[in-house]
Length: 333
Ligand code: PBG
Image (cartoon, rainbow, N blue to C red; front, side, top):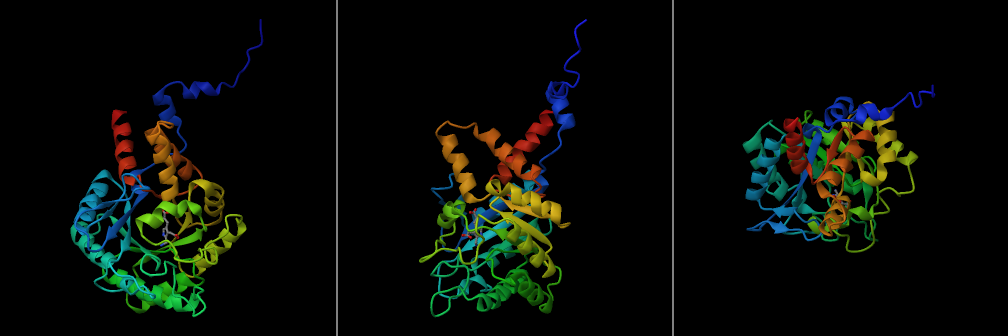
């Protein structure tokens, strides 16, 4: 009699869809997806973003509609980015109570209340005429500590407009601590902080800078965002943010930084989010438009990979669509 070989047959558990579903180690849940949304002041119609097909700069009205759809699809949270009508050196519109994000937050909280988690990007690059994430010194560097004062004011403006979670994304040293104490001093102890802790100086943000109209007018962001060559430094950023009071931390971009996602997930006991950024989105869309990729499968596979690497929450421009496809996959059984 011939040897019974192989004894271990991993294909047994792969044979049918029902079997694969039963043994899946990772499951995407729409409730853990966060939809980034752009809202622009002073436009009458939504503006398409050419480098991000399917994503638009919303008007307040279309924002409300898209937010409603996302929530109905089961998406867990919304992250707002504002594009103001007027920019200046200090990004005055960012903490104006009538600034575009504050108006959007007020409308969305009136519509949705606590039915979703309202988040806002907390940064200055969309609001400054020079496009940097902070205010500048006379010699044109980003002034860390002056910028912290601006961030503190923005946090309070967003909290007053109804934000549940602020997302500081400027990579200034001490930003989480400055925001936490400003929020607490103003009576907003309940507003949480999702820190963009490990945020790299990435070329994958290219399309976002069209979407948010925030490309730096000189230089780049390498003097405050992290060098893609570094990994241990991310853990240091994360630990500092936690010590300063971050409730959740984020790694950004996601796909090219899955090793960082895993290291952070293994090192901390708070929720770890990852941001599938504009360039990751644009690459999938561009290849799919050429017919080179099966778009729908790649979308879910890219999100599964990010989740498998250790991200509990995923910010993705695909949030609503992915939530809908996960639901229909599930109901098909
Ligand atoms: C900064 C910010 C950026 C993104 C989110 N917040 C851009 C940057 O740092 O240049 C990028 C998001 C994306 O590419 O999808 N406010």
